[in-house]
Image (cartoon, rainbow, N blue to C red; front, side, top):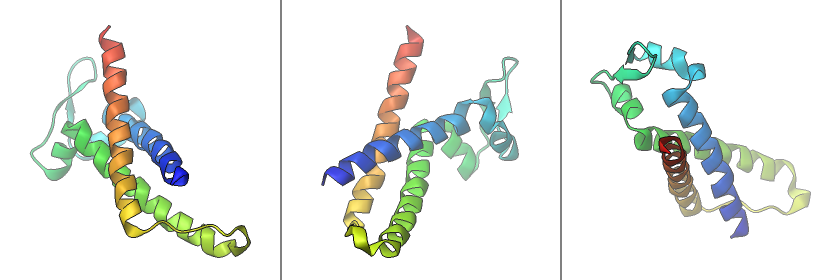
Length: 123
């Protein structure tokens, strides 16, 4: 169970970082331009198209949930191959419901981190 908690924190940090880059930082600009998000004079995204991706990028909670899902699926795929490649370490696979919890919990960690960052920026 400790492994699940550790993976939640690690995947939550990774999900928050990727979602933050995609939503607000210059490194994710090419993605936002591709889906048609407009900008104001300071470069802040302000015009979100009325499409699925526009709605996802307009809501950080939605974006971090989607990113957490992708990160969790990649982790599940990689962990499965790692456990099978190194049987001498006697590692165990997570059950499907543990991956579901991992996705939701890592998304919650990413959302919580974003709230903390926004709160510190508001000061």
